[in-house]
Amino acid sequence: MGDCDFAERERVQARESSLAKSWLSLYSYLARTSCPQSQRHTMEMISQTDKERLEAQLSDCLKFRPVIAGRIAEARAQGDLKENADYHAAREDQAMNEAKVRDLEAKLSRVQVAGEIDVPLDMVFLGAVVVLRDVKTNREEKFRLVGQLSDDSSDDYIEVTGSSPIGVALMKARIGETVRVDLPKGERRFLIVKIEG
Image (cartoon, rainbow, N blue to C red):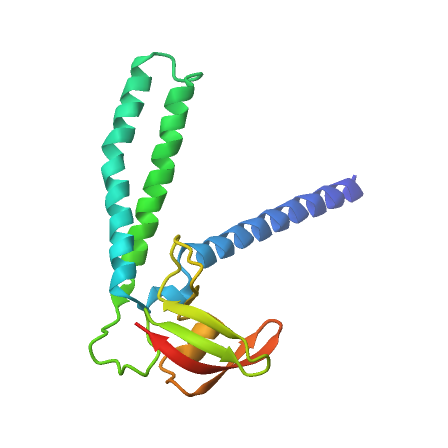
């Protein structure tokens, strides 16, 4: 009988240990994903255009709230909510819209518009489109330095954030300088050929 008690106690302790590890893992995940340490105290620099784009997206989401509320009210009036597809679809749209509102509000709370007044014309800063020449291949590429990637795609240039490896190397570099970029596939060097607006 003593062996059974010991075995049962070991199983209970193993379950408790496993449960504690699961909770610790979940807590650790939530702490990392809800507000990363790097975003808690730092402001992100973005261009005025990027800020206006974020504000427009937020405005669109806020305008959509009454539309969704109306859809929910209409679906609710139909009766039984358990099998009401319109109701569930409207509630899902509401949840997604509210998540986007929270995300945009959080982004806007930690951004600051980069002042473009005092930036020399030959210096790379947010909003600039930079023509780079790969020192090794002599191939030219265009990059636009942004505070935050936009949903708009352009064939004219590749958007890079100021916190990306290329963005970090380019920020405040000047025309004629060669910058070193540490990429996953290895180091690359670029000559800054010109800066466009």
